[in-house]
Length: 167
Image (cartoon, rainbow, N blue to C red; front, side, top):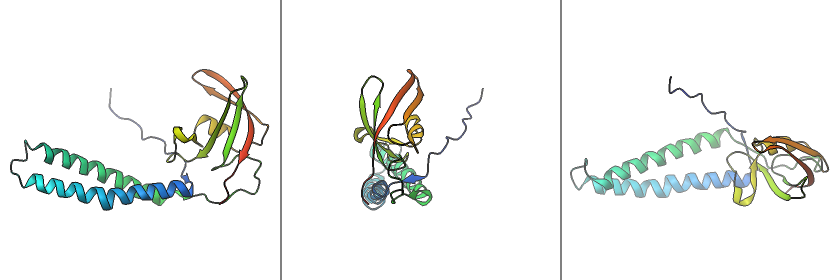
């Protein structure tokens, strides 16, 4: 038995303008504010002497590695992302960036926004276009039936509304 794991399948390379700004803000926060502060703390801890038993030094070095890893990821990811800022010509169909309202067969209503994998936020009801519901609803018109397979079994929805933000 080996420890090999195939690389994860990368998600869609689309992002909204708001999502891009959030990622750039996070990158700036890490690089310009947090990293210099942690670097200063590490150098102060190193000046205290024995580094092998210096918790501040060890933790600081670990935190620097975490920051550097996230900065590398964000830099590479921002280079490959495509910002989608235009509303499609046919506003009656569900495409990237739109808000959708769906109703289940039981009458439960839900509202979601279709976004890229970097913007998923359950608190705001932002779902990925790579999710089962996201894939199923892309390109569908209001009134369309949507069927998805989930761990709970087959789920059916009806697309009741499609809205786009004015950009």
